Length: 372
Ligand code: FES
Ligand SMILES: [Fe+2]
Image (cartoon, rainbow, N blue to C red):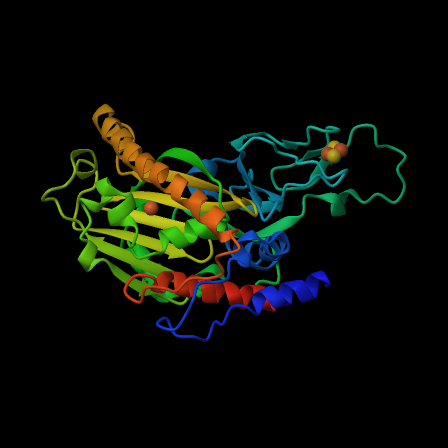
């Protein structure tokens, strides 16, 4: 069977037209097949708006941030003219990554391999030992530019330049307005943590989108502050908002101390970005596929005060609660991935009360991979 027929056969196993009360999950092969994984990198990750950095990382000229999107190296840099630009972080000489640190500040961009240099605006400047090379047009050998956009505290890029819609069109006016009311600009980045999960990236997303279904069983601390029976799930076109009132009575001490306010908001934006907000505190999750059964999740924690000692102590306590919740999810995600590989499992049904977000996720995914 050719790869294409094989993929078509796998894609055809999911019916996106069934309503939630008749629907099943996407089939297990979507989580375990290497060709399907490669297809997703091309059709989902290379063709959607992907988080490439935070604005606080690149506030000054010369500051840059690198990332890896769908396997491709990307760099965002603020020029001497104050303009933020995105480039493929690929040297025009022999393709090495030009900037290799996750972030930093530089006067120019120098490739570590043979020393070619580029200006902060991406033009090729220095080419050691390169005289006598015929028909070499320096002007057309700058870093390849990349479409990028700023939204709230972040920078997003789109590898596929022939993109279907702008980021704000993709998100939709309602979501853009809703997020605006949270005044995220008042929050400051505090800490980043990386978590590795032994599962396909979609296992993590499914787990996030299960409408609180797993919370009473896996996260006792978190469960003590959420109002499980009033947990709401609202689907948008390309996002899902899950929210829960916060209860203070009977809250487990460690969690209750740092999860306050009226409600917790959990926004998932297709395909792999989450914004979690409670009472002026936020963390974001970026789900990065690292292989068919390997996923890195990057957490950024934000707080209103990241300077005073007293606030920093509280912030640390809050991050630790987040850490505990992730640790609780690591084992279950691994267990799910193993089960997805079992010959006894193909697909499962969805809870109508809880799992509408997963249903949306699976249908959006189907649309993307099918077009690919
Ligand atoms: S690959 Fe960058 S200078 Fe040779
Ligand atoms: Fe969880």
